[in-house]
Length: 382
Image (tube, rainbow, N blue to C red; front, side):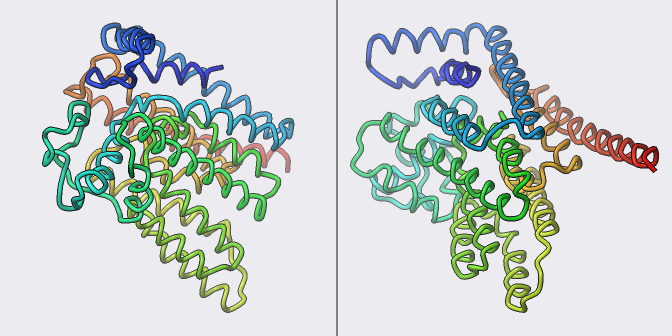
């Protein structure tokens, strides 16, 4: 129900320069939605906050059911697939990156130019420029993302079919990531498989940044998790090739290469791999990637996609669970000032900085509190 609410809310953020369809009934509905998003900002903000809170409430309900073993894998996958199908047809409400992906591929297929050399502004008569952001940058991603996306723009002269083809690709990457999280957990922690899958796949931030906004970070993580699963099965060559695909999308997973090499050498010596430590190390390395990305630009909510697939493997650990939930929740609140004011000017950057900082300190405080609480509990048992 609340997934449907998120689906409808996404259309309140349709860019005023963009018309998704010429169908007259759709244009009336689109204008009504834009009226809420752009002219009734307090209402729009209240709706967003309400949807996010309700999504988190039901997220915790499903996590509780999984913890108590009262929910089946079949039902969980029904929820995940249904939610993905609905949100795949939503508007990319909180990011313009999807438009840049489409135009980057269009530079190749329509203009027959190199996107590493040419930028959107080099084609000033293109109608897409009226609703795009970051038109001044050349292609910032790896060649693999171009290989995956260029075929989606071949022979298609209409924006809407291309838009949904790109969304299908990202949604498939999301489902693939969930699939491999489940497969990995089934191998190393089968008792936590359902909990870990829910922890990742039904997290509101993951759904919004992966399926609604359609960031290519989830495609990068799909290949990373696939690579880890292949490592788990000692298929080292295939794992390396798949990891190269991940690196070739957005480079952040380059930090995982030494881990893969370590597992390879350990495996070749027939020594036991401590998978708990491996996934803790992966979490740490992806946190470093988030820090570097934040220093290079600013912290963005979708950077959490780097960490959460690996965090899902150890999501039953309180020192993983608590920060993941708090930081992801605060990350979604970063959109609130923009929804209310309609810009990113001061004091919004300062508010966002302190919001992110507060989420980190709150996470540390609660982890320490939980640690001492568990210590006292163990002493009482003794």
